[in-house]
Amino acid sequence: QVQVVESGGGLVQPGGSLRLSCAASGSVFSVDAMGWFRQAPGKQRILVAAISSSGNTNYADSVKGRFTISRNNAKSMVYLQMNSLRPEDTAVYYCNTVPWSAQSWGQGTQVTVSS
Image (cartoon, rainbow, N blue to C red; front, side, top):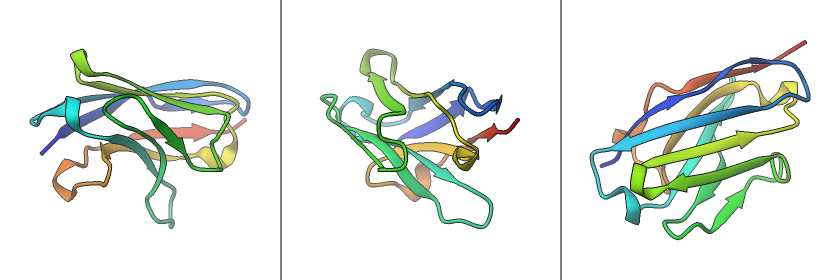
C-alpha cells in the first residue's frame, strides 16, 4: 500500500492561497490514482480532488475552479494548490489512493481559513 506524509497546511486569510504536498512511498505510486480528502470537525472525511496516474483530474463542486491537484510521479509527490480560500475550507487535509485505503492515511495537515 501507499504510505503518505502531508505537509503545507497553515493559517491563511479568506481569499488567500496554500499549496499542500503529499510525499508517497511504499507502493507502485505511478499506477495509483491519488486524491486529496478533507475532514472538518464533526464532519465526514470527503474527497475534494482526484488525479489518475496519467493526470486526469476530478474535483468536488465545492472546490472546482479554486483548487488544482497535480502529481509528479518521478518524485512520488501529489500536490494541491488551493486558491480563493474560504472559511468553509477549514479542515484537516489528507492524501490517499482513490479509492482510499485504510492503511494509507497519513497524519494530515491542518488548513485554517480565518481573518
